[in-house]
Amino acid sequence: MSAVYGRAPLLTLDTLVRLQRGPGGAHTPEPPRRLAVPDGMTAPLGCDAVSVPARLGPLLMPRLPRVGCVYADEARWWWLVPSDSDYALEWPAPAHYATGALLPDSPHVPGLVHRPDGTLPYTPPIPLYLALCRLTGTTPTWSRAISA
Image (cartoon, rainbow, N blue to C red; front, side):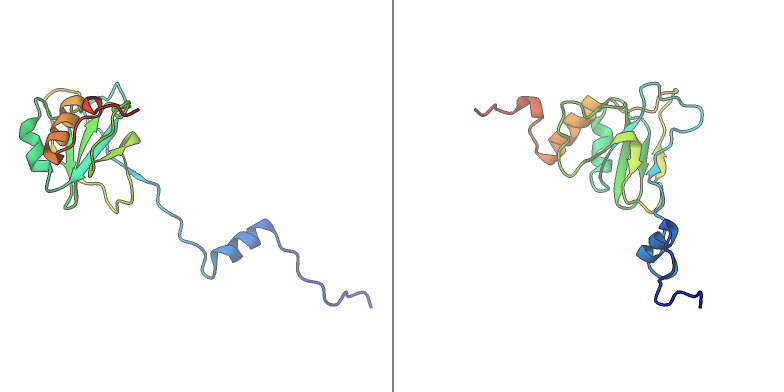
């Protein structure tokens, strides 16, 4: 007899991955969504985004000297800012800074609610930061006392 009894079938890496995922295969996570720069606009400095809860969005708009592209859904409002606008800044809670304008855990991309004149999509980050600090009662990072 040439048959070998008690020998398990050969498992390949593909088989092991399928077994780990469970029956029916695994759900492939969707790539993160990104806020897009509208057609006709350019982002020569790259793009990040700052979001706040929707209740703060309408309060911020009149406090800004220039408003760039603003996106909103029922939960959050998002402002496009130049890349690295978080450098040396601690954005106050409940703001969220999104590098690359990537939307974490968002089932859809929010709609554009404000588009500025011209070709640049940015809201200046320092006025946005200061307005957020004012609305949230947060002392700007550079104004805080240094502790030893």
